[in-house]
Image 1: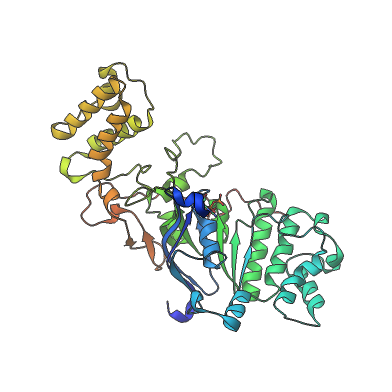
Image 2: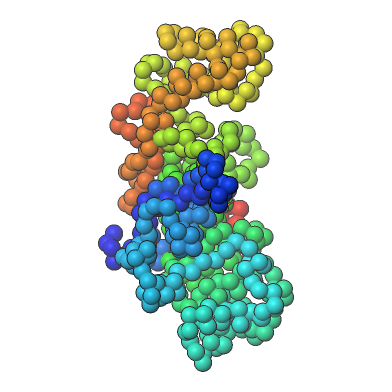
Length: 435
Ligand SMILES: Nc1ncnc2c1ncn2[C@@H]1O[C@H](COP(=O)(O)OP(=O)(O)OP(=O)(O)O)[C@@H](O)[C@H]1O
């Protein structure tokens, strides 16, 4: 891809929030929420980059930082090759016109006292554009987004949720932008009308040559609209690939878990769905190395113990169960039978496991968990290094980024598996087609 094709370049973008301010807060150690950490990607002209991740993983903060609604802690955003931080005056004003945003809640983003025509005209006025032709442009845009231009004088409450989001679309288009950040634009809408609004957005993209950064937590929505997909976990990008590549050949265990947790409408399917274990850690003190490692079913064994895959799997399960106190510990034999039916490992690893079993039997869960985590989890490459790998794609030729150490050449272990496709190629599972 040439620079000509790149509309937006995000380079090492980082946003930390420091809790509390003022004199009293300054007397205490301040907690820093690491909401976005070292995120980099490009968006090509005319494409839709889908950004997906669980609630709280930093999607909105990333979007707001890209648009400079909040200042970044570190990193840079280049739009049309220009560093946004270095723009001022007329260039900054013109760039702000080119970058618009649509939010999740179509109701609260529309002033209930204003008619929809003037709502659409508002950005034109704010930017001093289209004088003398604002009303005709507003009517034209209402029609383009699928509304009746005759409804120019109606109020937002006279429209359905889907129609109100269409008003928002018309307003975002008012100043003829190149780039629109869409932050969960259909999440608040009934599933039955989501596909209609998404289809309109795709039509508008083609007609107006738009580029979208499309944020959603719903993978079926992401699959419907995206050309490429970026997956975010706890403030960081974990995977980025072409849509087909990401859905058919996911390489990060977090992406795989997300895909496996999409409900499949098949009553015969009894397979265990990929429900993620444990809670998302706090962004105030995120795990070192790979932030997903504390929940990762494929955490890599520390090399020093020379465990078989089966032994490591048992140790990993036991370590997590002790940490989360998910079992009763009254009898050592019962604990061994539950976690190590083939016997505890030999050597140092086995001694550590036996120590931990003794610990939980005397109700010293914290010490047992700390010992196991320090000896095993913290010694894994997953805890020691930030993963950063390019994978050869199986579908298409675009870059496939996967932040998982299973792609490290020195790592022996189970390679990430692809998961079954979750729908047809149009990817409309869960998104109905009618307005
Ligand atoms: N102004 C702020 N001050 C402190 N922490 C914040 C602020 N804004 C966001 N955060 C924190 O940053 C993290 C990321 O939040 P963000 O809203 O970006 O996530 P998200 O993925 O968009 O979630 P959702 O889908 O629920 O909106 C969260 O832990 C959140 O509590």
